[in-house]
Amino acid sequence: MKHKKKLSRAAVRRRVWIFLVLAIALAAFAVAAPYLTPNDPNATNSEFMKAAPCAHFPLGTDKLGRCVLSRVMMGARTSIFSSLCVVAASFVFGTALGALCGWYGGALDEIVMRVVDILLAFPQMVLAIAVAGVLGGSLLNAMIAMGITGWTLYARLARSAVMTMKKEPYIAAAKLSGCRTGRLIIRHVLPNIFGPLLVNAATQIGTMMIGIAGLSFLGIGVTPPQAEWGSMINEARAYMQLAPWTVLAPGGAMLITVMIFNYLGDSVRDLLDAGGQNDG
Image (cartoon, rainbow, N blue to C red; front, side, top):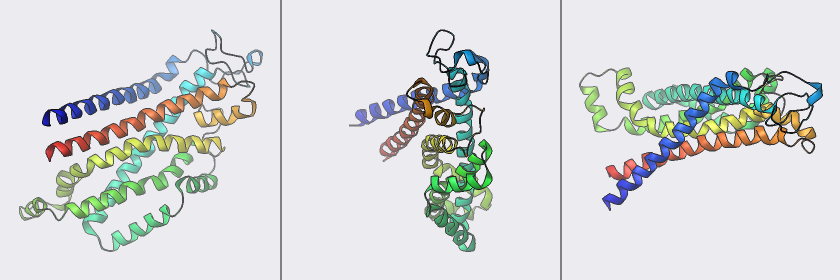
């Protein structure tokens, strides 16, 4: 039985590495995209409007004659890194605030949790559309709109985990030894709640990517001519039957990217679960 568990954990760990390498490869590709594009992503050409895929334009062109492949490659940079930035900011802010609420409680906990309840009362995308509509269309405003509710998940998880953990005997022993509160939270509390929060962060990357693309699709996110997968689909939907590659290319890129990050999050969760079973 133990041998079976070890094999299962090894298989899960292998899967984590596979999707981690794929995610890192996507991020590296996004960084290098400006140097790899076969054509200028913003250059228009009236002679090649809605041109089918060919040697010069491997994924065809859009209604303005722009290279779809080059725009998809540049869109990877916009979509991936904007999502990573929003998730990272939400992770840090939500975790820190939730940990403080769980540790100190009192008025701070009541105020923050009521704000969380208010934000969670609205569907995230509806609230993001409202915020982005008020702020105006831009990538930064779309990121702010998605981040306003993104932190609530980490705050709730961190708060509940800290409230449970601060009652543990080793925390009481650390207090008696003279360990300061800040040092206690950073060295003893946060490392023990990091795993579940990391799993949610990995799976939330895909959700954020779809959310930002959705705002761009509605015209309140990334503004043209900046390449972004959602805005590319929005621009091409009017002539999708005449030039389906203009929609399939950014849609396929988004599908593959979201799947990789979602599978990475699921694999990390399975690895943590397998580790807990082996420890038990």
